[in-house]
Image (cartoon, rainbow, N blue to C red):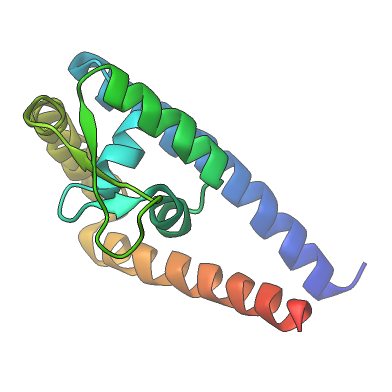
Length: 150
């Protein structure tokens, strides 16, 4: 294999492992609030502004069908509600209820503690570089996908 192919394989393996680790952390943080990581992810996407299911899927990198399933569960559990979308009659907006906001609020102390522990492990300077590096990788993959679609 070429060096580039080796780098892609190493990157993919590291991202797969990291994804599992972040999901495990998220599940542990969400569980005491009565949420799952996926429920937290969808509620988090609409904390500051209501979005249609397709918009949540785009922002979170999830499938529309997966978000729809979770959104319907959140509504059934009283953690979120659908409201009319002035821009589109059929694509209702999802927003958290007071109960959903309270559940997210229960995650904050554990999240802050985990963030502080991770900053101690990495060092604050290195920790600051992580989001930008991940966004750069994500943007490059998105551009490759877009270029291929043409």
